[in-house]
Amino acid sequence: MTSESNKMWGGRFAMSPAEIMEEINASIGFDKALAPQDIRGSKAHAAMLADAGIITKADAEAIIAGLDKVAAEVAAGTFEWKRSLEDVHMNVESRLKEIAGTPAGRLHTARSRNDQVATDFRLWVRDQIDGIDAALKALQLALAKKAEAHAATVMPGFTHLQPAQPVTFGHHLLAYVEMFARDRGRFADARKRLNESPLGSAALAGTSFPIDRHKTAADLGFDRPMSNSLDGVSDRDFALETLAAATIAAVHLSRLAEEIVIWMTPQFGFITLTDKFTTGSSIMPQKRNPDAAELTRAKVGRIAGAFQSLVIVMKGLPLAYSKDMQEDKEATFDAIASLKLAIAAMAGMVGDLEPVPDRMRAAAGRGYSTATDLADWLVRELKMPFRDAHHVTGTIVKLAETSGTDLEALPLEAMQGVEPRITKDVYSVLSVENSVKSRTSYGGTAPQNVLKMAQGWIACLELGSKTG
Ligand code: ARG
Image (cartoon, rainbow, N blue to C red; front, side):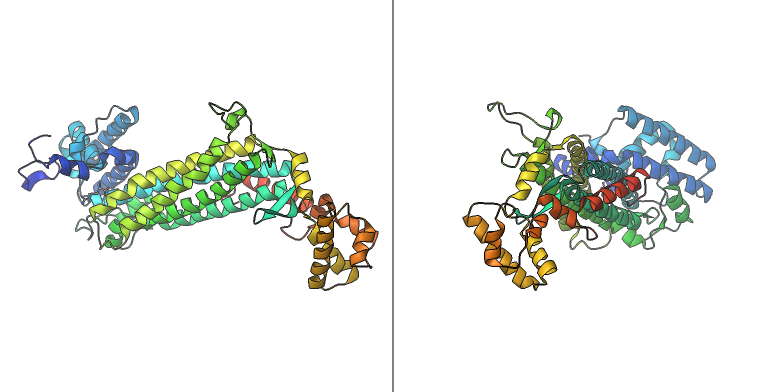
């Protein structure tokens, strides 16, 4: 610890901060991740200051060239971060001073760290949203391709995790393609609202200098400047909204992860994963564990936790900036990194997994899964009201259960004992293949529907359409 006060703001300070003050105050340990965005924002600000005649062109050139040097040092890993300089903004500016001399001192004209950090963080979150969108799209494509290959592979569909009605594996996978499409939509919505520039809000009240906020906004790829300087420095709902979208996407990932875990058990045996996506046990030689799926399932904890953590930081904060807001970054950084890892791991697993159609088909036929088909047949062929058909079918299922057989194997006479008008035609609806084939309603599980949907998605995703 030095005995001088902070050289960036210490004019009225005679002493250096207490060691513990410096420790709690400094954010450089994590906000150095914002250096590229910080430098980008500063370059735009310097260029605008010169254009507006607030600083000279020569000063702006010296600042911009100096910032490029700083950026190169950061990229090369040679930049020396100092905790005594608190945060990324002051570390960058202090190094700029060493490189560019006096002009560096003019960079902070008409600007505050409050609008600076709000700008940097927005730019960072925006970049991350773009990366997440691309990753989710790659996952959708992996799912759609697997779905296309297995449009007709029959498996049990479950409700309450009890066998319900047969579906196809492709249909099941496409359900996740839909979820991830909505996730991409949520991120895209967040991006739209996020894409306004806080730069030029200054500390909180704006500035008396004739700055051009439209110019810096455009330079940084924002749609427009934010309209209220108090809001500009104190809004963090762009991060909250992104974390909310991340939480929902993580929930979707965790559901698929859980299914992979279940399908991988020997009791189900619906899928296999290769050595690439499984691990062994150090004691039980027979084990093959789906660790990546388990970890994907677990990542929701951190991601939902980050959302919760920022909600609590922001709750009840008076306008405008408070140092509390410095706590917005670590959890967000961690949540976004976790989400990106989970999406990539899931895309890898989806590509790697292979269904075991025999096991799926056998399971699909168990649990009287075509009972609804029987009831529907009674409605269609015998014009029975559905409620009565449900009752008759229930009695037939009970009969099959007591005689220890499937519906398909139950003799016609046994069924006629319950409802004499039943004919041998009924067997045409009792096989799982015919059951799925009959589900041709829009969005239903019929293999022809599933194939069409899968191919539609693949075409859409490969053409690079934003939401599809
Ligand atoms: N490190 C700070 C943060 O992350 C930057 C803004 C500091 N502003 C201030 N007035 N002390 O929020």
